[in-house]
Image (cartoon, rainbow, N blue to C red):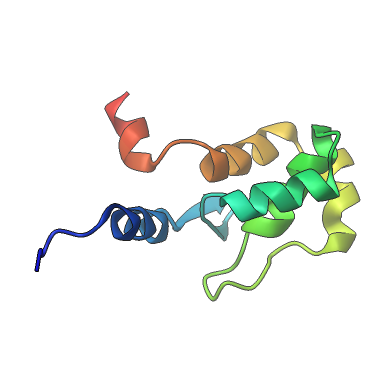
Length: 106
């Protein structure tokens, strides 16, 4: 019996370890990477991509520490039209970008 984790166990541990806190305008936002299932759901909800898809990412992936969504479906239009792009980009990059460890190496 090997004590070394299997690849799937290592991937699952990596996913869990990537959940992290971003602080934006004094608010704590917890994020984790997108999964394959979530990407499929995004493609179904927003097949044309664009700003609406970006807002969907935030609706799905931005939570409080307990895991409750920070944004509601009612916030989607405001996320698209009334929020500075730099704030949206920062959160989306944290969700879809490389792990913090990879960013630190570059």
